Length: 177
Image (cartoon, rainbow, N blue to C red; front, side):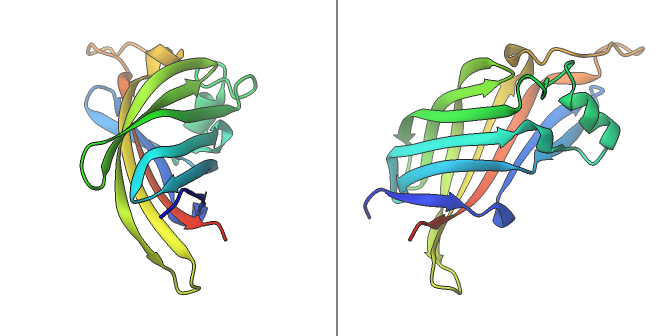
């Protein structure tokens, strides 16, 4: 198959994150609004064009007060940095369906290289005759490296929020007609 454009099916896609909370548990959240430019041959992603744009204000941790704090200047500073972006710069095939997708991740005005472990889940026709492909990806980042440094010391030692953030992405994309 030749390189073609794929559109993210937002109803069947997700962008989630997990971070250690109080040194003993994990806090999870999602970004509800994101889009991507994907131009690829799903059977060989090595020459694909992959770019993501995430609306930071769409953060949802199922707790309104926490979401408002995350949008504030102490964290993402949505007023000055409303978008998080990722643009792939290098894609290496590791196996038939597994790739290292390296690119530039920009959060809060800071751009750093990040590598996602991406799995091509397969493709097929949906009930309306459209070609659909699935992709899963994950990475870990240091939030401090992106200027997300707010924290609080705990009385028992340690801190409220861990530095390592796991990012998981599930994409269902529809081949553009």
